[in-house]
Length: 254
Image (cartoon, rainbow, N blue to C red; front, side, top):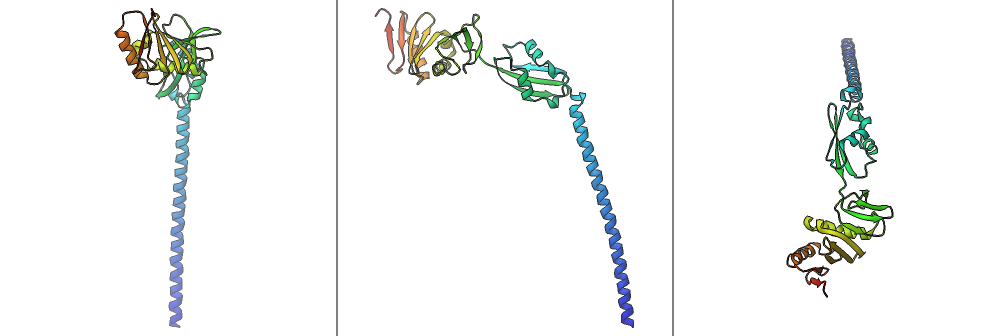
């Protein structure tokens, strides 16, 4: 009988302990749920606040600044990008700006930078005029990539003599490689580049001196030899530097 009482008492104690544990676990579970609810609500509020800030007038563009442009006027760029004013800085993307600047053929590339709270900076890289080319539509200025920039209007640039589209012409690319290999002083003295083949390129300098250049190999040595020959000649002569280690001076009287 005593054993039964002890067993009954032990069972009651165990049941009481289980009820306490269950109550405690229930409270912890409720607290965890409550905490999770607060965290989720806080996160949702934060996301909403950030989204509202991105779209609000707090970051609206009030000024668009251009840097790096020399040939394109600020007034032209400002007019082309006027629709950006009032737009949030955070929503502007390069594709949108590219569509606005597409009319400027001389523009090679650009980059945008936000200066909160209200300024957008557009850094411009312009194509550089390299030479002129006669086309069926007249004489135009082209850059090194063969992109037509503008009609000729008094630019003092070398003329490249090619009969096909500079953008797709192997002869034009060969002429460009020669011009880009020259030191600035010699480049400015070139009046015309004639390409009969990629292995037969001729330069005509201001004053009429003809330089047989050959192909595009050994460009640095060729222009160093040519400058030396020019410096040591006072008579009207032409030069052949196609083999720069064995240059030839051609006297016009022969």
